[in-house]
Structures are given as structure tokens and as C-alpha cells.
View 1: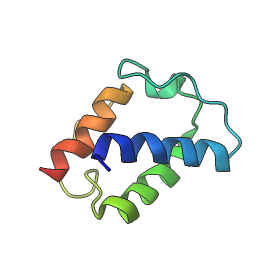
View 2: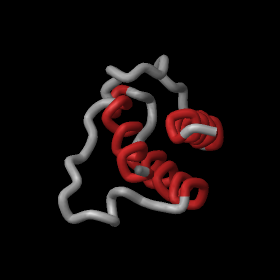
View 3: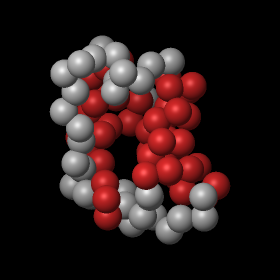
View 4: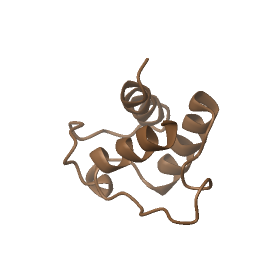
Length: 81
């Protein structure tokens, strides 16, 4: 499974577990408008670290925090390279 599909899948898992209604997932979706709250994002990052084996937020001191879903996915894709 690609990094992108893994991220999108885990977003759906977290939303379901936390009983959150997700906005339609697209690259230009602003993360704060996604339907997920801060707890959901913390859970998502932890699940992605377990699944992918890395956390791009802790692996570098020079992380620009993503604003959109596309930027969030690219952060993980770039960290995998």
C-alpha cells in the first residue's frame, strides 16, 4: 500500500473510532476543516508511526507544519524517501 493510501486509510480509521464525520478527502482540504480534532490528529500520527515506522514531526527540527491534507500526505511521502 502506498504512503498516500496508508495515510488516507488511517484518517478514516481514526475518524470512525472517534465518531467524527469527515469532510470529503481532497488534497486542498484544510486540516482544521477535516472534521478531526487535535486528539484525532495525535492518534493519527501515532497510528502512522506504528504503520509506517517513522514520524516526520520528530525526525527533523525543520518541519513546516502542514495546512492541507495534500501537504500532510507529502510530509509523510517525503519522509519515506
